[in-house]
Image (cartoon, rainbow, N blue to C red; front, top):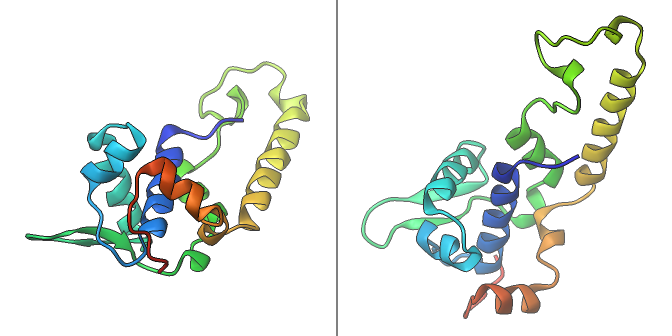
Length: 148
């Protein structure tokens, strides 16, 4: 099983913003820290703002920051919102052409595996990802990390 880049970037944005606390960040700053495309991050930030995890501030001096405390951002909920419907095998796709699907137990097993994956993520929040704060801020080049 592999999460999409969209989900990966969403979690990275949340980590960055969580490390910055109340400080305003920009998409350019986050893109530079991770070495990823600003265009991809714009879509990610828009989605996270729509979910209520990120607050965007317009105008001069604008940017973004977390909209809630890191402990209130559940990783399972973020992953589900970013991933949508998991497609673990061809039989999960509409209009698939699997000859054994009506008699196959694999689809049910894959479904349970996907649910188990999310159940593990459900046990963690963004706060858990921020625990190695000193190492993370050093790796991302964040100078003044103020906890939210």
